[in-house]
Length: 301
Image 1 (cartoon, rainbow, N blue to C red):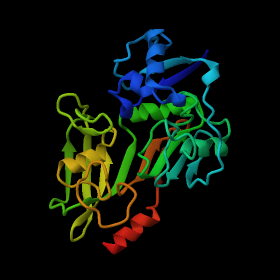
Image 2 (cartoon, rainbow, N blue to C red; image 1 turned 180 degrees about the horizontal axis):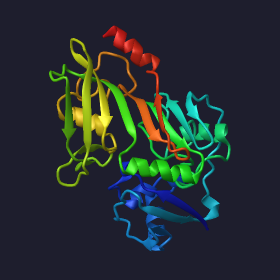
Image 3 (tube, one colour; image 1 turned 45 degrees about the vertical axis):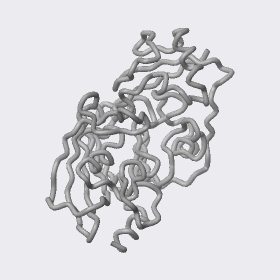
């Protein structure tokens, strides 16, 4: 039996553990449930039921037979590297790239590319499926993603994420014209009560979620905004902007408005990432240039 260790992030909270592990190395949910019953899965050292909802900072340990050990291959995929040293690497992720392998996406991910570029210099806290990965952005969201090259750096960045001290600023284009220059959306975000694949403003079961926004430019039917995350819930900006009647342009999940442009998902870019360096303690700020499609769209508008 091989052991795999996962550290749960805030983005993964409130998901059932059997659903969280389903798809790991293409394993079925029924197989995962069988492993849970056999106590091959523990959370913080204790066996749990399949209905257990994972929480931020939980340490999930999973024993898996060697016969089904996943094989994630390094791939020579070009990376737009914004910053790199012996501890961390910050990459400007392109649209359409998945951050880490999961069911249906075992090749072409950021992890596959990082494995080729960094070799074995990636933290192992989140297991063989997510080496180096401490946070993620959606497949069709572009911009800065930080990966860690050793466990100490991983712990440091994870703690900064936990206490919300990392400076994360996103640029987005939303439907409609915002009247106010800036504002704050303070609405809890959690799993959609009827669609587990979606998130929603969930007053009953959601977690605190705070997004600050500022108008950068107004157009006839759209607004270019900067969003600053105070918390980091899954799909937070997309859910929050939709909740105030200004869903993101191109968002095919949280918007019902027609998009007159040929876009691949939401117009959202992780523009700025600021963090305390794990070793030096100095503040590091990375600015990711807007992707070409985004710049082109702004010119059209």
